[in-house]
Image 1 (cartoon, rainbow, N blue to C red):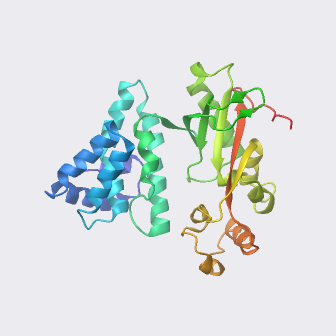
Image 2 (image 1 turned 90 degrees about the horizontal axis):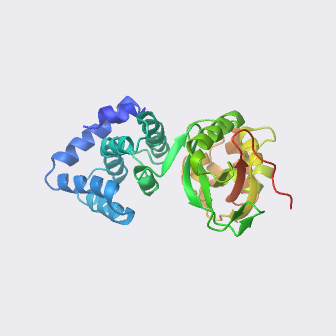
Image 3 (image 1 turned 90 degrees about the vertical axis):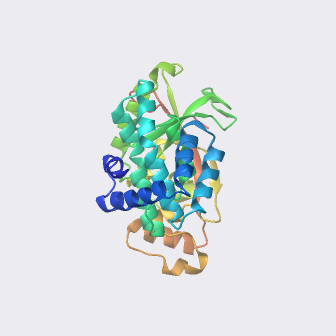
Length: 297
């Protein structure tokens, strides 16, 4: 079924086996088999809305956890995706590197909910349309610049390259620069004046985090310093809390939040002092060799 596909994407063997069993159940059960096939087809050739609606229907048909159902469908679509990569002249190694993100989301789902699957399925639609790629440590997709302007370089609607930071280990400055070089080469033919404008929206780019939580010489602070902040968004519901503590935010249980890592201790102190988490929009310009100086205020 999907065990070999899961192993190809570096899933832990026990997870690959569990998902394979769930896949067999879904494909051989008369009430779900056709629905699963339709979900794969909608992911590859339909709209995101119809795809997600179909997954909801499948979830209502079976006792298998919805997180698991979603991951099974995503894994079943890997072979059609590999064919799509080949048809567009894209390397199979790029497909594997990009879709290893499924293994990162599997780990997050296990850590946060204790289930074998994914809880961010809508995130993956663009992956299967060949619109988002992993190039080294970061992932990139073409994106319309959402701000009014950035100096003389960008205006609203201009093409930028939105980067994402998968949860697969440290984000060192060296790994980011390597990724930027790869992205510059990958998108090079379509760049204006040879400049790669990289836009990012992340909790890692929220100024209060950088100033009050991240240690000065940490990888997180160095990542923050590579970018220029454009807009700042406090998030009172602490939407990204789970990324640090592996559990959804609950104000009544903040005192019991784990303090296993220095980052957890720093964020717990930050939140207990009445602060909320947030995210920042930020930009950098890369010319293929270096990050260009930030615009002066």
